[in-house]
Image (cartoon, rainbow, N blue to C red; front, side):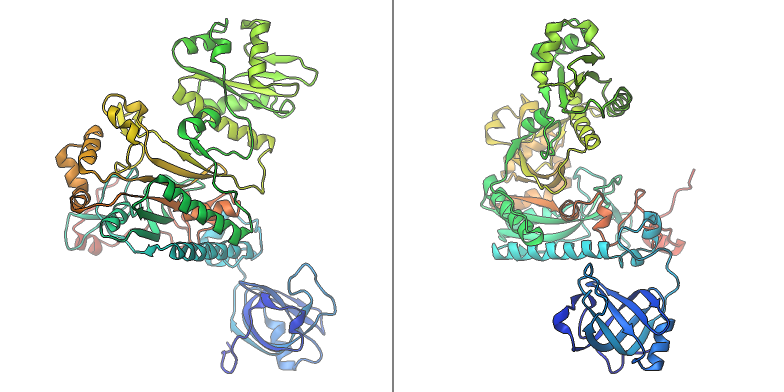
Length: 593
């Protein structure tokens, strides 16, 4: 194996152009491929900036030429030579006008044949690539993702620093407190039988930082939630965490809008129209069936109560009489795509998420209609539905009748599924919007009681304070979410700082004074010593990167992600530990059944 003695890298591989011709340079990197043409050898050398061609010919020293003959894919090389014009240019490559005529070649590391080819859009299964993630991360598309993530964090720190924010690190080992998801617990060796928790967010500490007088806090924080994984969720994730004192909701939203405008311009050269549009939670649910609506396409929900309340179809009229909802969506031009067979698939889909089925109408191009319920209806009633649905020849109308908490979310999910089937979602479009005025309480069917929709330190709207106890279903919170293309990017609120109101909220959530103090006493004690009005927000950095790059999974923007069962194939964690370690912690494992 050669050494680097006497040479030092002068340039990255992907930075060369015609203006560098006749320069003497030193480059380092990995072999993408070697082409042996007999009297001529070309080596494509790759680093994180791109590829440059190394050339070896009859003017090359024989020992150097012979060494070039031995290199293989993924060997680590250092090469010294002079930049020259390529005789056969590759204009698809940024460095395709030049090559480096090598006079000194060092093999710094040899490589076995890798388990998959290091190329963009590698067809090898993701599980195999994650097993060898250090090789997967060499691929140009993944490196581009990680580099963009780095740029996003740099813009983030610059923006908030310029706006007077202080970056404060909060602890990783904290007290376990209820925050909506299951904690990861860490046993204490010193305090046997006691546990730390890994933070689900820095929520309580950033509020304490406001009490401490740091009126503008920011942190790029690691967070942990022990919950089931999906494409846009990992058990450990990164949050751009922000808190501000002496503010109202408008101040927080304005600050974040400025950040998003700056970020999209600097990273993607996309101008975000400001101020961002807003929908209340109720408007979002009524129009899109989701509190994180994708507004890049239409197909909004319409209500049919007036049209069907007295109709002969008992599913519809009965739902209206019972105070339930009859609502639908219109899939424009979907007649040829949403065949009877495809609608049957959609029926099975909605049954899987809580609905009883779908009532449908298919309008052929000649204007004739086929329907699952028309035989129970008069012509005038069917015409009224068509008018309310805005239906025309070639359209398909899909209707759900059920309780509101079923009808609207199911139609929201159906809307997304149908939009994907019809391929009507614009690819190069970024629709940001705020969702505001969330319900303060959420009804938990399993518990049979109201629970906090957000954390219990979220302030109710002042106008809702008189009926906190008497009308929980209609209490709204000073909570707000930032949504991008149907994905929740951020969530925040104005906080409660009045100890009397906080005690009242704890009581409404079923926490006794003792329980509340045991869980949150350190925070409520702090509020006795002059707590400023404050509010904040947490933005998911992983989701933000995923959405800006328009990727399907967080795993493509996280360097070392977990898979569906929360394991990491590369290091094979989680893994067992030896008995001595457990004994030191005072832990014994229960026998597995």
